[in-house]
Image (cartoon, rainbow over all chains, first blue to last red; front, side):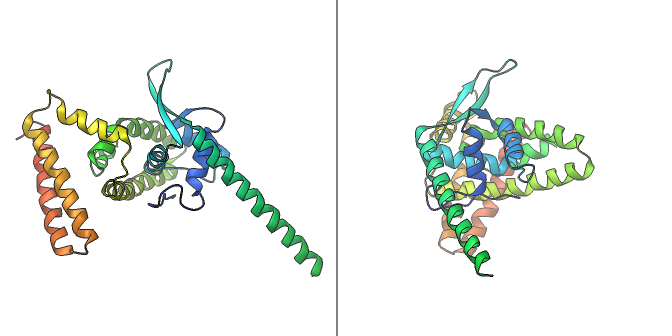
Length: 117
Length: 139
């Protein structure tokens, strides 16, 4: 079960559901069901978002202006789809830079520790 | 199951429900079809997770609303519903009373005044039952 905290989305590191949603929207817009299945694929089946968690996170992302909602013409019916805004793309990039920096530091320290053992 | 899901959506603030309710129900139905195909255990886990996260989500959305962090579409949807001439005036009034009572309850909780919060919670429950009866034409 995944939870979205009540703090503002731009306060501190991104939660995993938010990071996965932004990642799923990075290449193209998607509607709710496509987001859930894509997140399951990205996380290799580890994360299955519930509708409550997904829409709670989408609500916060819309409020923060990181994503936007629009009508997507579907073959059968109109669906509300979501896409990243320039602001959201910027925040995703910042988070990825932070994670890369952390990964580099952790890898270097593990190597140092391995050499000392 | 769809009926139960829609009933749980009534726990959310009206604006949120109007902005996302139909979409969430459609996604839930599509997921339910998929999970049912994966076996009984997966389906039951799915239903349990959906119910718990929906209830938790409703609490968070009321807190968001109390903090004034509503998505503009929620406000617009709620306003549209309030000004919809096809909706009887008594239903609109009942909806407004429910919204007011929830605000009062949230306010009381934030001041740790649980006695008053309980009073508003019971009043809201009564009002919600009355609203449901009005909407289904049983009043």
